[in-house]
Length: 409
Image (tube, rainbow, N blue to C red):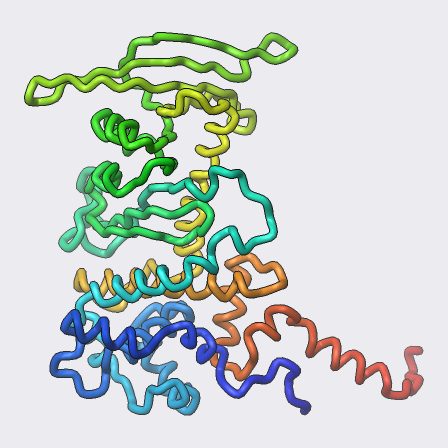
């Protein structure tokens, strides 16, 4: 059998971890106390093993260690030269601080964010896309309510499940988290909105869980635009009311200039001026009302900004569908957080590699192909830019074989 056209001298996984800086990772681990009393299972090996497990979508420590035994020859080329047992990995997940993996993610984001920016893409983006940030959270269900409290009432039968909430901010032209915080599922989202962290000209899109008049007024004072969905219970006074109709006399857009007021505990009143833009969502067949402090932009632009918020929902869906966040490799809060950070790292690395391809791939398709070929000696860019190349060679060589008539010709 001939050699593959995509042959490479190292496994595909070796090409993935080439995006990591081993010396920087060990430096971060030492600074955070992750290398104390460690002989061989250092922060680098820990990350490489966890990243391997996450990409391969393993559900348990037993699956991880069994696979490591089978791939011993290939893993030695990646710097893993000793047998790793379940207890070794379990202890590391329990004891090595999860902040090490947080710092690794932030370092990688800072290193590769220019590759993820839409500046390097061929498609044209609106001018406001580079200034737009999106904030939201997603809840990952856990097996217990002890570590991270879930939401809702306790069920009559059985135990209430816990949940860890991942609060996330992304830049719309990058598509990966730029800021992340973990809390219990019962924590309100609004704490994540920090006006002091934003600059003049920034745009923030969010859902109605973040509505806070005081913070909205601070955003306005800093020159930051926000766009969110209205709550029906909000009380306000209308200063100006305009409506645009289509040729059939039906409403297309309604714009209201409104004032909100709220008394603080110290007796001081908060006055906030905003604009409510109501439009018809044809697909959902209902009216959608948006709230913004942008008093001048075209309503269509405000609607487009809010629709872009869906990008963060797609990111959450992408991570939950392609990585194992239903099963965890440890029962401690530290182990759970490590696995989520490694999932974020895997997602970022695959997106960086995806950006380097000429051929268009869905993230799900790319993640599946990477998982299937992870320990094969194939070149990533050769395989993913032209996956049919081996079959074309086989068919081309087969076409030169003389045809012998058979009984069925």
